[in-house]
Image 1 (spheres, one colour):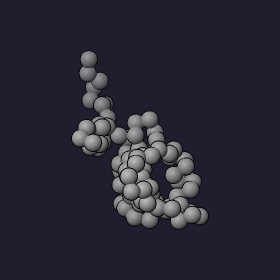
Image 2: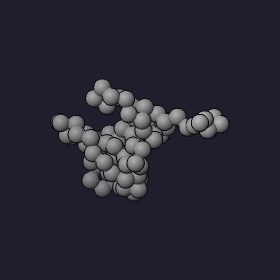
Image 3: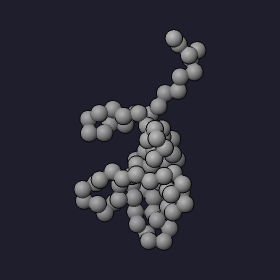
Image 4: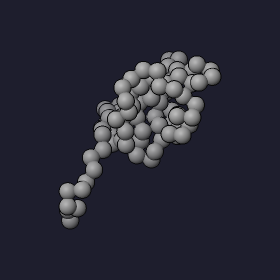
Length: 83
């Protein structure tokens, strides 16, 4: 059954060769307000978590934080507006 054309398309990212739907793509650098820790924020997943990596992590492990944590503790320093 069709929903009358109100289907919302989610952005898609490629993670280890698999296409994954996400809520929002960021692709921005954020700096912690007090520690100057730099993180690369990739996207917001469908569960509402922000997926990022620490810029000093040689393994480039993907980590999670909440939207509130991101904008409470970090300031955007590079990258376009969140899409």
